[in-house]
Length: 121
Image 1 (cartoon, rainbow, N blue to C red):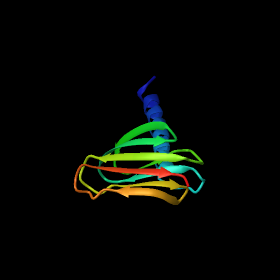
Image 2 (image 1 turned 90 degrees about the horizontal axis):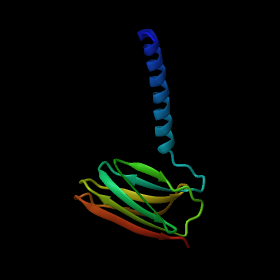
Image 3 (image 1 turned 60 degrees about the vertical axis):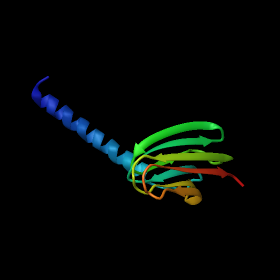
């Protein structure tokens, strides 16, 4: 292959990657009312999540806000623990569609833990 073919292949690869990133960002920031449960973490700091839904444990960590799709249409209970590692307020909200089921927040004074337990009525 010559340099011209490498350039064309590189340009095509960049366009495909850019389209994939735009699709991923737009789909993760939307809150839908499809009956599925989601957990929203709103912060600018570093955090770690421990989540148990109906006996199934998962964890995640990151920096900044994130929406986590739980992909269940019914939940009996959920235990949510978010450790905030940096100064700055953090809000954590469990939603069913657009309905707020439970939430918690930190004062933003430093490293803190946000915990709540949700049980379906």
